[in-house]
Length: 114
Length: 169
Ligand code: HEM
Ligand code: HEM
Image (cartoon, rainbow over all chains, first blue to last red; front, side, top):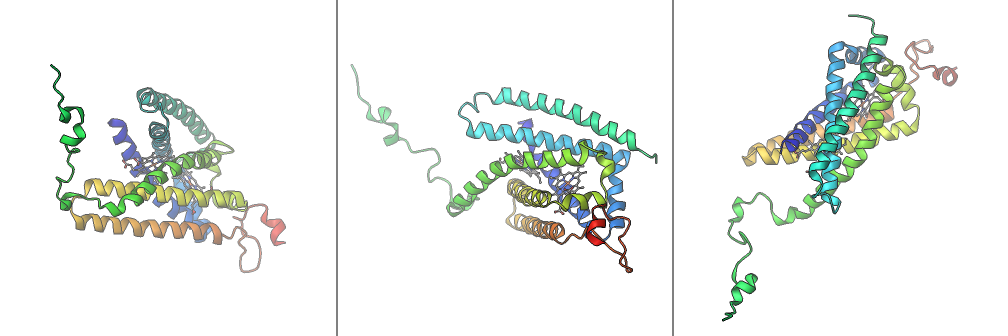
């Protein structure tokens, strides 16, 4: 039940991010200055946390989505859906630890201060 | 003393399937003719989802996890990627699949929570308009993109990626 709520909330969140993301990418057709100025915001510490949150949402939605697909199409899917939910949580955690460490290390290496 | 009760042995003869014919059609949100569309949508959500895992994970990996990660992203970085038709096609597929998958998911959610017909119609009109604008805009951006910008005097701008030097001069 909560996994269904989580899937729904992350799906909506990603959708609204994508609307904004295509708009900001389209600035490459306005001018290089406009694109670099707006994309520069993605390098602010607050946005770095936001990126970790976004990737966390995507990774959960992706892994839980694969679980839904397996429950629907794999003969044993319904029998193992609990175990697969555990696998989703563990894989999500491992992926997010690795992603966050790498993302933060890169961020601190190249950070020029406020 | 075995009494054969044919209705108990063959329930299909005595008991109707649950709710069959007992719901006035005006209380049903779906009409039978939308059945095959919903079936296609259901399959599409699963097929596009599986493809999006690969498309998005590679997108995030190549933009955030390799090279200078988040710091490398600027105009020249995008120009460098879209100089390669593989990345153009990659982003195009990702754009269309993610937008259609997300829009169909949002449609389901609107159907679930918006109870009035007029509210549903409004929300879906806004949703489909936004989707159309974003898909068309994103597609045009990928294909009309000009990486090697020159100034009025015909010199390469500072922002141009390095490969432009061999293209322009
Ligand atoms: C913080 C995370 C993200 C960053 C830094 C990022 C960065 C970028 C950049 C630099 C581009 C330009 C072209 C390219 O590099 O291929 C781009 C394009 C694109 N990204 Fe992302 N991205 C992120 C997350 C996402 C996510 C989660 C999605 C999918 C839901 C996505 C979908 C797209 C699409 C569809 C395009 C093409 C846009 C167009 O056609 O104009 N991105 N992104
Ligand atoms: C990363 C790969 C993805 C996978 C494996 C995936 C998988 C799924 C699956 C299996 C469903 C359930 C469909 C159903 O119940 O009929 C779903 C729903 C949904 N997805 Fe995705 N998806 C992915 C990416 C995305 C993206 C990029 C977006 C946003 C642009 C998105 C937005 C949604 C929404 C809004 C729903 C509806 C949720 C609901 O009805 O509760 N998904 N997804």
